[in-house]
Length: 363
Image (cartoon, rainbow, N blue to C red; front, side, top):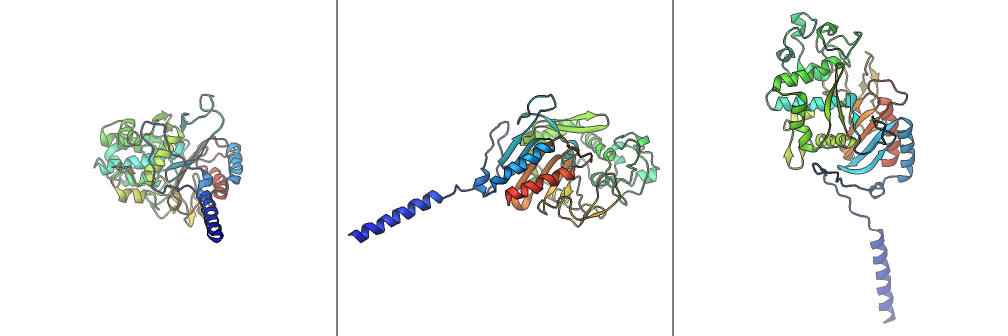
């Protein structure tokens, strides 16, 4: 009898210990936050086995480099969400604060151009002059007719990016440097004119077309605003995260297909030409053998972000507006803020600083 009681006691103690050690099940399905709601599922970093002792180091670098908003999603769920300092109006930065995307917004434009193609408003192999008319540049008719929408998406128009104002979109600022497709140069003006291409192709304002096809369907906020020659998107950090979920889900939002042209989406996040391996359709690509940067014709060996996973692709803008998507780990990283000491049009240094510390957290 005593032996039976002893065995029963050992079993109960073992069962109790096993029950205590059981970790909560981590959902692996992709989560889509509900539309028009602040509800957003969260996961604790410790439940993912992340090294929480290193989060303080990550926060230190975020505050040092002028970060305002920082979000990390795993399978669409919030693992880290931090806000620092003040917004554009001098008020404490919160999840409702609006900030600018800068050139990270190029990823939005690439996506909406793909949607316009899907709806047969345009084809990216068409001449840009089909939508902007002849004489949109200072080139000869023969030179101008060689430029296509694809060249605008891949930064290979051949227009001179060394003009006094590379943001200027008037014909006198758009001068010949090389034949279309033969030279890669990060040039804002030809990119900015994609919004006019979309407007003329669809017969709708850029804001309205973007809102009806993408923004409202995934619960984003924000709008496009004209600033001098530029067209800049402003939104909350969570809206940037929503867009990241849409792209990581290959154009789907729950059971609705927002972007059906999977071939375009795949091409958008892969090398788009043979001049800069690390550039797709207005997206930056990690893990390539070489890369080019704005305002330079040098080709650098290595990847754009050595500390990040090789399959990461990124929307990156001035002062460190960053959207990173890592398919292999189902991660999305959002960073909005000021640029610290960086002056680059594309803040690779801030992105790498963050991933140096974030990689120690994720392990």
